[in-house]
Length: 138
Image (cartoon, rainbow, N blue to C red; front, side, top):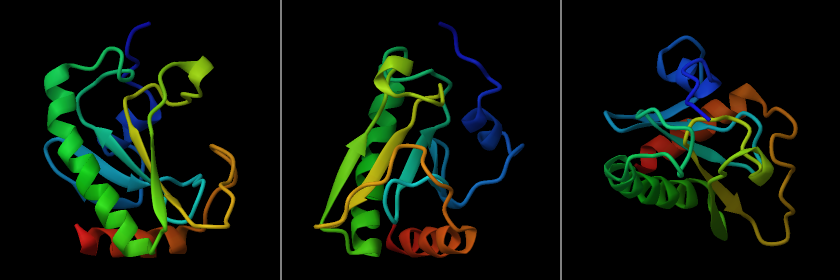
């Protein structure tokens, strides 16, 4: 399948839709997931256009992975999570719902079950506060 430049992440990257921005540079936009699986669920969205890992340019992947690591460390520090889960979905049967390459950093809290992927929408004030805390750790 081909890349759809009207997908929601492409529209956010173009400034057509809002997000809870944590960080932005030439490589990617880091934002809060508005349908989080846990408190602090953060997304890293590369600016290079690709549907997912399967069609991404290796150079783009090489450029974004250090940022993924930095964000993971910042999320853990900002949330006090006991651990982290890194997720990345490839095509609908694997759970991909937005067809623009992105990485999920999901904080794991011991004894707390994860919510469903794309479950309920989070409170905007809480997302804004978390975005600031994570940004301060970057």
